[in-house]
Amino acid sequence: MSVMRVEKDEDYTVVSNFYLKDKRLSLKGKGLLTTMLSLPENWEYSIEGLAALSDDGRCSVVTAIKELEELGYLRRSTAYEKDTRKFLGNEYRIYEMPFAKIHDKYGDFSKFYKENL
Image (tube, rainbow, N blue to C red; front, top):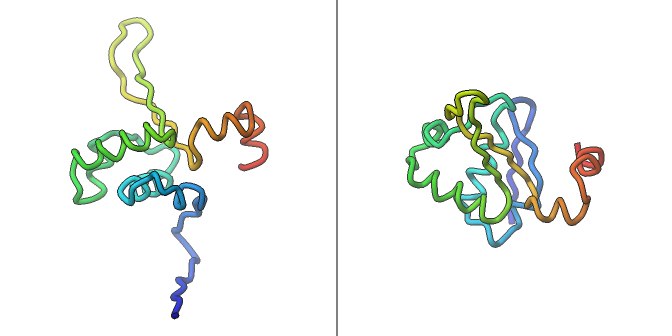
């Protein structure tokens, strides 16, 4: 068996094997999660923005987002302006391990972040 290795000297992403080995997660879900994890922290997440990163289209991104949410790899919350309640957008929280597993293992996120980041 031959193995090909790629020299990683710039512009690469290191991710957890946990979600890559999660058999419940489709290849589409794994691909979108990896793409999302590779984006800069200040990237403005939106369905349209994510769809623009590939040829899959909006419907494909929406189904992958729903899968990631159902399995606990993504949490979205809606942001509104305080005074006018005007819709500002969604906040995306992305996890390399399902939210419930992090919570069960560490109790709170401060302990998780100290040990893993």
